[in-house]
Image (tube, rainbow, N blue to C red; front, side, top):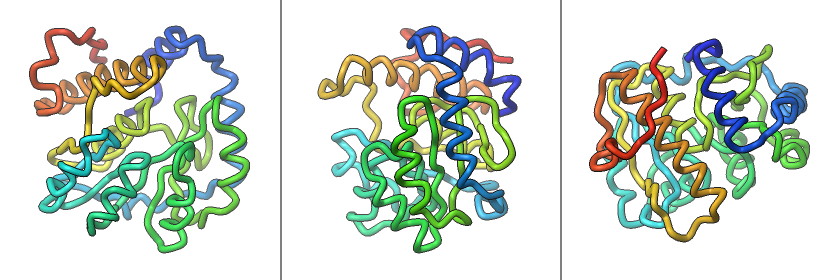
Length: 227
């Protein structure tokens, strides 16, 4: 997704949450100090089934659904559940807030990690970005991209993982370990899940694909405009 297309959505998110844009830009610039251009041939998912794995509490019971996917893109702590179940993670998508040690371990082993900077995680970026193997890091922002910090769309780790898989040619997105109605999350996280739902609804319309994770929910989603 081009930033010109993403920007109106981003501005709506900032308004809804009361986030300052310059906070995201400052975080992006902190991450940029550690970022190097990424070889995106490594993320060639053209024609492949990509499992986009979320960190819902139900994931341990559902994780075997990744077995016959061509690629596994895991968000946040889902990466640990997938690996503990004996499956490989092809891309780890994280804002470094829960399991940054996993990001360090994976990059040291040569697995790509999409590390994200936003206004609330600057201390984490400052602490953990220097510890990552930079050649295996895809640095991302939700603000305007600069140099080697990229923006493929998406807001939470989970929906950002889906936008990245889409960007690099996935033929089918399979959602594993997602729960938009998780009662264990905070009100703030529940609001973020509403946005994740809206963003996936936008993405499925852009792709002309129906995501099973949205079945039974579409009529209640406030749709974002296609551009």
